[in-house]
Image (cartoon, rainbow over the protein chains, first blue to last red):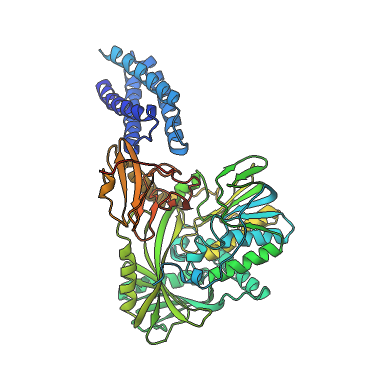
Length: 110
Length: 504
């Protein structure tokens, strides 16, 4: 199950990096990628939560960071759809938190 | 053939000045169609200071492109609404819509408005045996709604009819002439009317501030009378934007049927009526061929289908006018009319489907009562903050899936063409250059008009509307000119002009 979560987060991360390049260049994000990145990350988070409930020890620190990143993701998509541009700092912070969570998950799993 | 509505062509041009200074009023109304003008008149007549801000000309939005039909029945059908709600609800709908028609009739008589207002029967007809049960069920529902309904086997039309539902005492008029006369009366009552004054931003507060190009309007209450409310609102998720097409033809026979005729022909529905212009010319109007905004590539075919349909049933001499119009279908079948924000005094009137002239008048009656603190018997029925999750689910899910799929078409590095040179004169295409999407139109003279292809409402990619030469957003129905100016829909901000600098 943790491998499934890692695979889902990996795919989400790749798309997230791709989206970040658009945000940093000040260009509109392609919404097909945005609406694939979010559900992939959400699916990974759901799998990780189920894993955390079923296993001991659980990757609690990674899970908490992923939840914070997910909250940031909701803010980002709301801002992206309703404002003229996404704040670059917010996209970077979201990405860094998710990256930290992902690294911690990898360390936990391997 | 004229590419405009018969109504707009058969009414004098209005001439209200644009807003040029700052104003402070009790109520600001965004939109000068039948909803905004009726509300403006009603509120000004009671002593409120009111300003109507119209982006184009009064009645120049949806009102001037409508059918001119006024009826107590609804596009959604009473049978469907009775199943979703109950008998009491459809009785209230019929009563409220009848009251709105009565209100219009009273104003026509009170102000001697020359708008060809006539009481006429409304008919729902099935051309084939398949549609008989639909007509019969709607007949029973109309009786349940308290309407004077009859079931016939004939109708005053020159083609075969399998079954007819007739509801007496409905009405028809010229909506543009009525809107213009109402604007005059509203102004006489003290309502300020500004044309060519698009609202560029609404800053909520106490009071609210509406920004336009040359002045601001400060108001305690704001009415969005723009068909679809302006800006990002949750109600947009409950609306499905659709376009319909209309043609006005002349007949060889000179025999024009009187009344409102809604025909069912297999899976297609058409609305037929006659109109005599002020110069005494007769026309037969046929409307139909609906589709979701921005979802039909070859929408010129819609006019051809209408012409084929009407030529198959009448001895058509010539097609004189053609136009298209937009409507918003509500999730649970009832429009959203009333206050959505008590704190800031924000009112909306939307989700009228194709029944907008009657619902627009009703909306103005309800909202003005709410603002004046009067009890209105139908305010709760149409309250935009009502919660009908089960009744709304089917259309909400359908429209949400449409919106999601439209977003998913926004793939990186993909558009209709990669080069501007691929766009021929008269064509509009989305172009993707260096990760940015442009909406580019080359006019007949060869000049390129380039704007961003990202809708300023909620960032869907706009689609080209071949018939209207406009950029239409498939998600929530915002429409823009080839130079990016907002025509209608929830978008407030124009599409920014862009230069792709790619002539390959």
